[in-house]
Image (cartoon, rainbow, N blue to C red; front, side):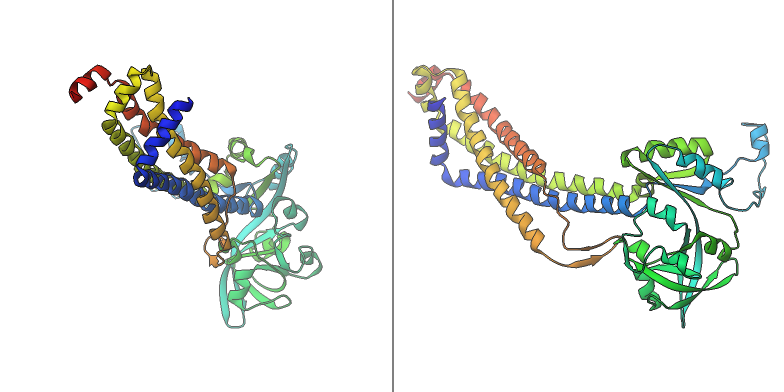
Length: 414
């Protein structure tokens, strides 16, 4: 093996410029993959952690996944006669027997439950009117299913108990109104009810869409404002094992028929974008490695063509077909391994540069700077792909070199 390695190194030194270009191609492919993966995976993990941390893992809503079928369609399914234009029955919204359902769900192991009433209101402060989503909660149970208490930047969650008509606003919503803790607002609901409410707290979840529209009040106050006494329209659940959210949501929906969404289903559109991002990342860095592999293929093919007489001499000295093949495979592997090691350094350097960049961005979530995922798995994956690409690029010319017949080569030279 020592002889084959010495010959492989001699061949690579003979074509220094091409070898350096191939090394740079491999190292840049590995380095860019590590940096891009750290950036994309870091943001994705940050987003998922925010969603899991801020929002309940499962939400049961006062609606059905499919509208109820008309009586005639239930009586004559697939019949030739179809009834159209029938107005659906006008029935009050809300989860029926909500307390019983909450009690039953609370008995599930590893599950925390909270009942809420969601509704749209207009908050008026001075001359400003801002539409908001008012969530009526029981603080004692809500702190078990969400992290609203940890996200408070002003006030306490229990202040809702100690203040008549207390209200907690999202930071973005408070900024729109120009209101602060201690200010008194006017809340107008779609039911026509009007209530004076006092701001007792402000929260910041880091999720812009929530901070700009969400407000919290006591469940009883929200029911009075919405003119829906003793009514709830959402049951929120938080699980000890978040990975069980999807299957548990399906079982709950089968049990109670109400539409029940896990956090994955509620954010499926955003999670789908992550799949596209990962596809772009892998295809971009893969293209760089493919270009580098072509460079390795070109080097070794050229060496095989230029060294045919040397190959004949080596075989005549006793080297086997396998030995010749190993020589040229080693050339590709050397480029791949050295390029990988350089790529690891490039990737680490690029990741540190990204980590040092500071900026504020406010979109679906609020963040300062890049969120990076420092995973050694990315280094191993990028290195494995680079070495495999280099080995594959070297395999065809190595096999061609091994098949050369020394007699034919010497005759041709003569």
